[in-house]
Image (tube, rainbow over all chains, first blue to last red; front, side, top):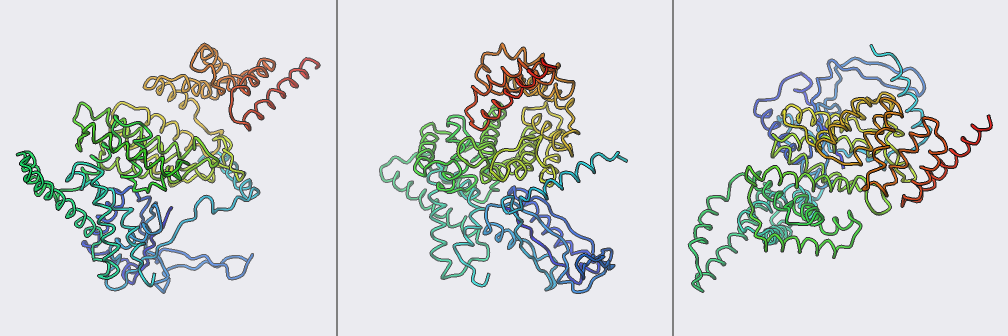
Length: 144
Length: 424
């Protein structure tokens, strides 16, 4: 089972302030623990939303609206994620509980989300065939 | 989670800590049987006291300490008992003194010692796999039984016998020395890959994949790669398993049948696992050690993984890698794979030369893939009649009903083609 631990953005992370050395060390130790337990798949931190864009579709089938960052409401934004592969939801919760408070100063928040498994995904044959065709078209284009 | 359920919290902690706790305890009491008992005792103690006292601030440490205390109590009692009967040896005295010193040493080496113990060559392969799943992966007897589609009592018995065998053969809880390391490590890797393959190609039963086994094997492989980072074969095996895992979603159709690599929808491959596989291979190659069988197999898997469409597959490289694989692990089955790769790289004639030689190989006499591959190649060079015979021969040799039907159909098509060819 795969789970994603989503680290929420804070005022500091949005302002591009680096976390304290203490937190960086704690995170490094935590990631090391994940690696040694054989459960870490990926861990990435994101730039603040000041260089992000948002694409929204207020009307279905119409052109999207593109908005430049930064975005407000830090709590709704994410600052990073850690993807783990574990035996059970219980194990995922335990790992999430062991993650250091990601930003400190009272604003740290981690969200634990389960990733869809193969059996839960659609097996729509037409959609899959289309996907395959698209892939072949892309691959057949001469390489730059 | 409004009310933390102690049982669920313990389940999570147990998944992470059980192997480490059992390993540490084995160092103290020297037998895995007792170690497992004391670990279980600690678990029971937690289930009893935590709902009242609340979950301790460091629950993992609490469990380890409780289990260790049980073990130390036991050792004390043993010592007293032996004193009483005047059987006290100087040995035991020394041992218990050492124990006190050793207690807080890092547990990483213990984990490795335990892995070498459960994968010890005195045990049968089945026993090694079951015991490793139980002690290192923390699976219950029930979970192991489900994964192997067998009864709980069979698995339980297998584990009991394995433990007894380790005890009677006095297999020590220690790291192998330099001379035996390579062989012992090979045994560990074999267990991990057996576990993985059992899950991946499900040798019996209706489901083609049993992800629990794949997952546990991959996890153990990754742990081992961190414990012994300087052996290229470990990274090779991890790379191989990561890349094979990347195909789990694509290798079975909605009807539950296997889809061949060449027919798989590559958009459904898991590119995260592929990337991890390529990284592991890279780590292995940087160690500049002689290429072992797992690393070469991983490199072959990587050739497929890198091809966005089947036509982009680098068959020349694959044929060369199969030739290398035969050098480290001579096998007619691998030679047959090389024949297929050669035919893809240089045309069917190149493959036919190898297949013709393999027809003399006694161990492949009843191997249906040989005539099946042979038929394919004959068909490609327009020798329809011979191809029809070979497809027929392959159909007679396979146990798989679906496969047989397909082979007979292809044989029939060859005959029709041949007839049309003669008429025109």
